Amino acid sequence: MPSAEIISIGTELLLGEITDTNARYLARSLRDCGVDLYRKTTIGDNARRIAQTICEGLERADIIITTGGLGPTVDDPTREAVALALDVELEYRPELWEQILRRFERFGRTPSENNKRQAYIPKGALAVENPVGTAPSFICAANGKVVISLPGVPREMQHLMENAVIPYLRANFKLTSVITARVLHTSGMGESVIDELIADLETLSNPTVGLAAHSGQVDVRITAKAESQIEVARMIAELETNIRQRLGQAIYGADAETLESCVAAALSRRGWRLAAVEFGLGGELLRRFVTFAAGQFAGGQIQAEAPADRLQTTEAFRQSQGAEVGVGVFLFPAGEKTEIYIAIITPEGQQELARPYGGPPGSAPAWAANHTLDTLRKI
Image 1 (cartoon, rainbow, N blue to C red):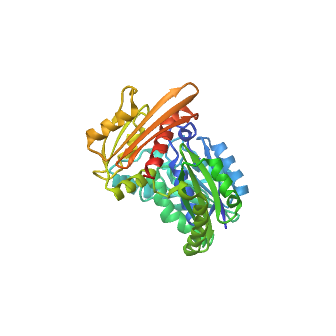
Image 2: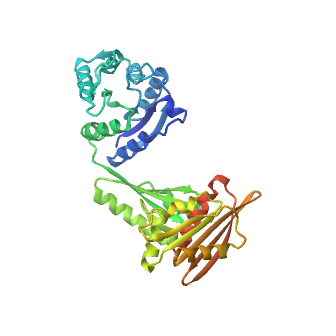
Image 3: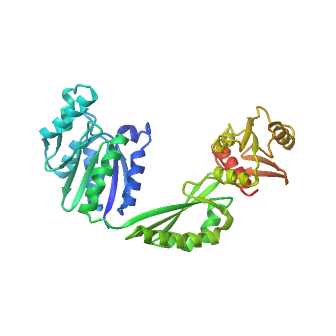
């Protein structure tokens, strides 16, 4: 199975001015077609440093994919960098210039002289027409390995990846394997506890199991590799059954499922509506309820001041909204720790919970919201 590395090019990425969504998309695309991804690198707009990174990548991987730096300006150095890395010259391709002219004509624009830079690609490269933009892409083969350069505009990159690059990789690297991932979401159980319960599974080589901790929840990722989608699904299903048996009710969903959707389902089963009041969370809890189906969320309120009686405040707001369920979440900074108070009132009774929080202060609202939703899903 071939291995790959992704190189994201752009000083704006390196300095954190924009988020690199291209690398995430490419990583998933490579995974889905059975290519092992071992490294992602971000580098600024410097031809020599990019060339050095490409050379280093080719020593480790079979496939190098770059994104960005294919525009017409001086600070778009990818063409020069790839040529430098492969020790070849840039050559002018008249057919690419014709494609660029047609693209500009379709857009009702006139290209400037510097746009002609985009018609130059490394000598011997396979040109890839860009039907959704003005920056042609190219593929350079070298000693059984390839360097593939794609534009940085996400829409253009994705179109070329799906319609040109993936077919090229499948044909030239005889890709038959499938790699699929499934993510199980847990709440109410710490990462260290989960690790103890499934530590032996985390040492498997295929499928693999990994943990990712977030504020108030932990994800368990299962990744499997096989020759068919049927086989990979079977492998994941068997391991998922094992993990669910060990973690039990701590698992609330998988993949796109959210705590909010679980709470909505619990309310729907009972035919209940919910009203919520919060203090100190900056609207975090109420924001999570906007995904509810029409009628399930009766209303929300942010308290400007800490209430003297939190349970009474929750009950009063529940009654004012005519809801069956009332929830109140109140966050109080207390020195090095933060105290979180949760009140839940249903037709079957009421709960009052007090929880200390000692993590980063900025994560306290998300932690409180997750903890509240985790409690609500079990009503």
